[in-house]
Image 1: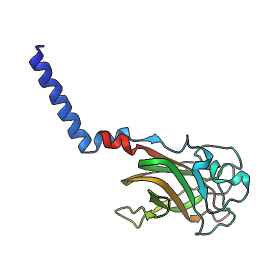
Image 2 (image 1 turned 120 degrees about the horizontal axis):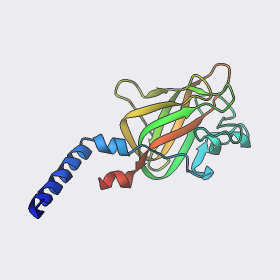
Image 3 (image 1 turned 180 degrees about the vertical axis):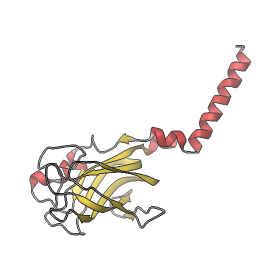
Length: 185
């Protein structure tokens, strides 16, 4: 292939990639890394914790350490679990589990997000107020792909309902990519 055709082919490939990226096709597929698994315990906060072994730092998906997840002192709608992702992050989905080996899990929750950790916005889906269905047992994973991605540094889960025979219990993962990576596209 002569140099001119090679250059034209390269330009066409770049334009095609740009069109795919601008339509969201490639970005969505590339933006699904685990964002919580590698966070240190100091990145987790909560309204309360039942004991040290139920602290928010144990709320990572598929983890069994401590008491197998986060549980607050009281099971009511005033409880929350907060994640500091460290930097602005593009969140494309959220997954939950109950507390390992227990009867403690959420059946419904709200997702809040913030860039400051002080001013919170509630995630709203097009077809509902923004309440997510949770789990039906402690160990299966329920993942929700967000209809509109969230760009934020902080995430907060607010339990709305939980297993009648247990209490609030949660392990969580968020999937996405660094906002700076998303902006470079």
